[in-house]
Amino acid sequence: MPEPKRYSFVHLEYGRASRESSLELLGRFRRLLVARGHEVSLLIVDNALRSGEERYDGHGFEGVAVVPGDNSNHEFTGWDAGMSAMLRRADAPDVWVFTNDTVATHHGWSETRVRRFFDQADWLSQHGGPWMLGELINCANPGSTPIGPMLQWISTYAFAMNDRLRWTLGTVSPAPALLDSIFEDSYEPAHRVFRPHLGPDFMAGAMDWLVADSGEGTARARRFGWKNTAYKVRTLDAETFPALRSKLRCVLSESFLSQRARQAGAELWCPYSGTTGRQRVRNTYDFLMDKVKEKLIMRRRRAHRSPAG
Image (tube, rainbow, N blue to C red; front, side, top):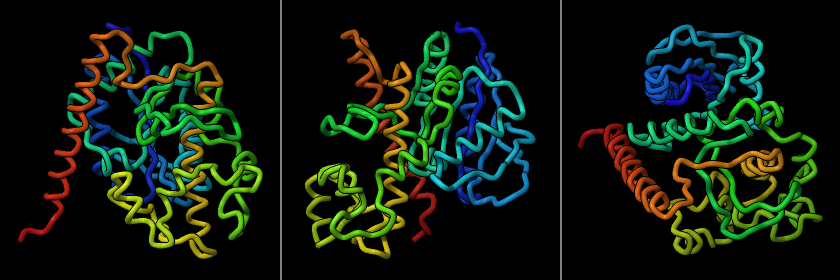
């Protein structure tokens, strides 16, 4: 058995609407870790909270601090505010776990999936080098970004890293000056969202997903198998530009986090990673089963919310 470690959770929300569903899941995370002898702490960051500090009790947690965040770069600056608040209260943990309020509302976690995630965290916690754990996703095509080439990134609805990597990175969010150098300050029809030096194909896939303009959205959705043709933007114009830029800053922040971790020498790891033949087959099976169970969990959740009729 791996030696006991200290785990600190920093959970990000915007308002309380999803708090109970998120904390029910984090409570399951906690029970598993405590049963293994680990020490668990939690801090909730509410990016909608303007001032003061609240307390939360429930799902096995008592006296959890709920602190104001920083919504300038949504969950990424919110997590940074949470890390700072956590470090003011206690020494750095061995392992940091970051979640946002989509971890429960947009994803279904079976007990097997919870255990698999923390089996990998336990295994990695013995590694002396920097590491980051989460759902590892391949780019559709290898690409270049302002901070280097990219092949993969870790999805940030739930991810973990050791304190060595946290210390090296300093922040979860990229430097504001870097993001500012990528985006136009205001709507420019000729340049769309990104500054001209980045070229017309920069983040083209994300733009296709987020914007359904000129009547092309339905055809795109059919071609790529998307259930929706946009995040919140039906057309790109001066009115929708701020929301789209804000969302794209988050998209880039997510991919940049993985790139920055790689540049810091970190291993990027996934609960379904494997290099030996037998392990690859087993992990592929585990991945497929978790996705099937996730769909069933989300279907039951939607049916429960629907009015009887």
